[in-house]
Image 1 (cartoon, rainbow, N blue to C red):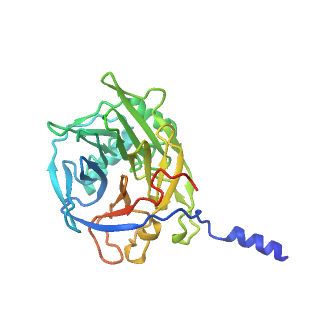
Image 2: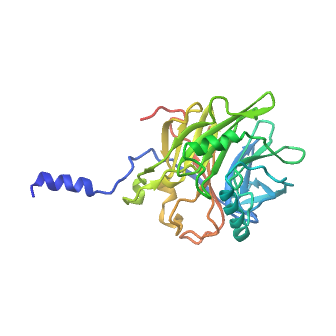
Image 3: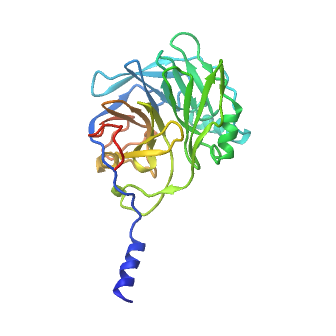
Length: 327
């Protein structure tokens, strides 16, 4: 075999690695105490205060006391009415069975808020959104059936535990973006006009099936299923948390097209921070001018250094800001 053939064979056999992205710098790390069900699954900054949800707590919304290095989750009780779901019966049945075993029949996977301070929680079990007003009782939004129908027609919302995983709401509270988790992942949008939620031309911004290469830090050749685990609205852009590849990506509001990505793999995959899990665990994202908050749903498992509590990381913004052009 010639040297040229050997060189070509080596290239084919080499691990499939993603091109390196700019690494975000870690500023601080905060264990979270006081979440009754654990499993931190979303973050939102509402009028200067961080809020979070657990996918195991159906009737609790948590505000976070961030005055110390270890944060304290302060529970706020909600009276949650019975939801209306347009998901197929088989997916709803599987969610009900799962709730019997692990708890969390609502399976809240994300939280966002509008400028008035109203909170919005997305339920993966039912594929819809609960509005928790500043005053008064929570209500389920009357989202259109077309949201689910269109998503499913594009290959999303097909698998149990792979429904809506993230939510972002605009300041006026009349436009909501939702992230379909995986197989296929995607981005959807609904908006309210004349008091009614609808899809306009289409609810689907992006349907993105397939797999992608891991970050170089994983040093492997196993492709990861593309996923979204949360989204955050900032400065006219949508930022996606891409758990399986340890990235944050900036995307357009109009189409969901990716503009630029940043990696947090270097810090997340340090030996002492690694969990004995076959998949990534970051499930919460808030992007602001100075940086990003990223929350970890550790499913009660301990990482290598023994830490068993949910964690929130603070990363600084890129040197040229979140609006910098792609390189």
